Image (cartoon, rainbow, N blue to C red; front, side, top):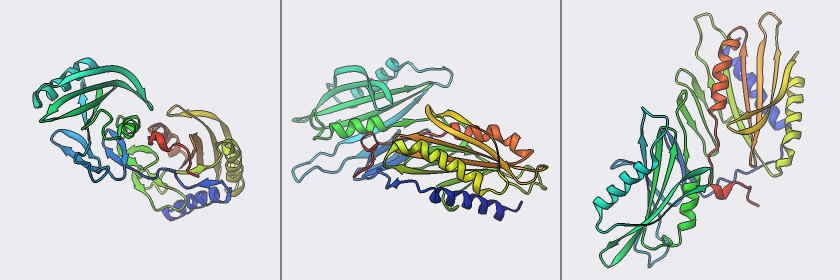
Length: 341
């Protein structure tokens, strides 16, 4: 099957979802910017200035002034610590290193509180401290997130205990930090999700009805069909519509693909999120084209994965496609998880 024909099939699949009549809403990720690093994604308000890889910091974010009298701009920096030889990191030891660095760069730094706490999906050490700066005082709020052999340390510095009224916003930033481990080689970042593909796969953002498509390399010179996996999402006004949408989509696929033969459907879990799948094939019995559709709901976002391959290569590529799907995650600012009115 020629590449152009394959892309047309994917475009047809994308148009089917539009035909299904989902009550899709505008995406609520408004007012936030997604900032990427090879091992993490972070969200900051759009009016914060972002720098990367500054003096050992992965990310350095600077707040805007909150008013004419505001002479101090709050900052948040993020560092990454690794211990590749261990399965986990010693959080207390890393914290001691960070506090020692702070104490070495300023005079009379004191730690005022330390506690393990949950912010969003992140469980970590929240530490507060302060130090004199001339006639003023600077306040520090650290959040250390251990993730297996790594630890991410976010440090906010402000000129008041409430960080110029930005303490709630800083908590949201900390809650929205999304550490992840590179599994497959290349990462595709989107404001609403992260997904990884093997380095040898080609990525396309131009196929109608999809956000990204991963296209496998040819297995040999005679390979005329390149397996691929696409992803799209819709924001639902009413999440209770999800299972109805799943049934509509599965029925529509069997109706629109010529000679489609369903082989399985059921439930599964992707990145801890419950969802549903459908397997079917179409085309000749000798060289059928195999399709798997996976649909999951994360908060108000309905994500649809569509992967397609031709036997016998499909059986070989299927474990890789499963890895791609399982690398998927949905970082998002904690304050924007419901659609705006």
